[in-house]
Length: 453
Image 1: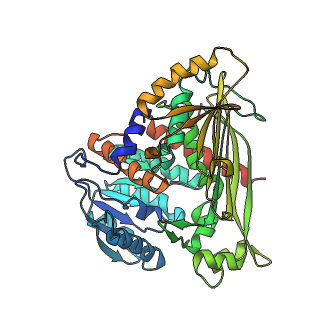
Image 2 (image 1 turned 90 degrees about the vertical axis):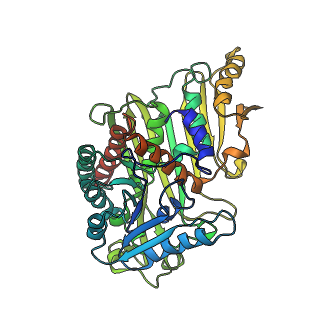
Image 3 (image 1 turned 135 degrees about the horizontal axis):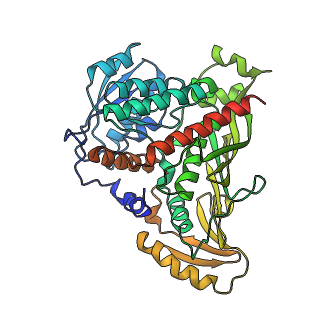
């Protein structure tokens, strides 16, 4: 997506005006399949113009679907801007067969158990249904092969398969991408080395957190890497996506010729039974987790690092999961892109009040750089009105108006809005599918390599 479209999406997601329909002219009707992750509900945190308010839900009976339905009820009953979703629910072991057979809608929303997700994707597109899936769409090499088949089937059936990449809608990410394309402000993207990569993205997450003002209850299976996926194939999908999206915007990337995998790492987060209980509300570790419990402590391989070359540029993606953020903090993100004239850095630590802030730090002492930056920054201001440069010791801070800080939860609606636009057009941008395949090739191959150590 071009940066201009990112800026526009900041506003349109909250108050859509265009008619949402598929390229066949049929209104969009949602089908939610086995919602096991809170992201399924976040897609429905707002209504969409002319998207049918009746949502058909197919799931096994249990706490996962009940948590999803409770979240929808909270959205429907909130005092300000309540939603009006009418959830029609089928619960049964044959839920996927019913969902495909009933064809009660034309857009399947998938956010749940990742062990099953790739199969659900394939079966949905085989049935001629569009699919908007939470990340990751594949968690191992076998899943990647099935995902390739799913994309081939989607092309044959003329339906659209897309994953929910919310980080493209975070304004500091969008501005970093915008400025990286400016020869005057950034120069040329450096190649870097394995020890000093040109692009680094690091994401820190927490198992115990609050979502929509409520303590998040994780499904027990979330802690089983065979069902959720290891960290190296889960959150890293966002980081790999950001690297591709920012460094090579709207460019087709071929995983067979443009990717060279380097060093990879994986290591566990250790959780006590009390921490597991607080997060899941379960009384004990389920039987399928006993393989990962040592001396009463659960090892969750949620942490990973991928070093690789993308079109000759050295990059690194790091994901870290802690149990709970310190008081007053939350998930954090660090990102650097190194140019010949300046480095573009996003920091989100204590100094930034745990809000992402974009910095421009010049390389060397070019006397005329400040004038070049000021001129180049005007183009960014045209696309993001109200942003300013603030001089600091090491360079400049990009001051961003509050109106752009829509929050992570709002990004799900922004992704959905963008995807619905693709449905209306009847196609994805040319680069999206090959780049999704590249992303999942990198994560699943990195997992295979890390597990051999």
